[in-house]
Image (cartoon, rainbow, N blue to C red):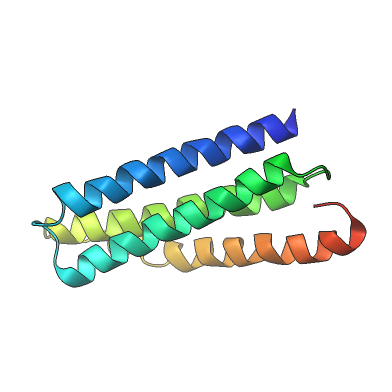
Length: 126
């Protein structure tokens, strides 16, 4: 059951990354500055990269720890979605500065997810 949840989560994040990427490339291209568009694209890229990692974990024959899953899932939400919020709020002139400290927390969770993969690879439990 956990593998199905991980695969579904990965698919949702992957789907949203494609939607947000298209939205950024087309709808926001004329609205955002070059720097804002690049920041938005960083959020999309990291979201997609980690959706692919989750997908690989979901199809892994090994048991995936809940901690690894949650590090990636919450990391994606905090990292990528805070970037989207920062960029979009900045574009309308009301930058949500409260989101600024959330981005690195998300990044740390993504790093922790990768670290857990390394540790658990030696234990054959991912």
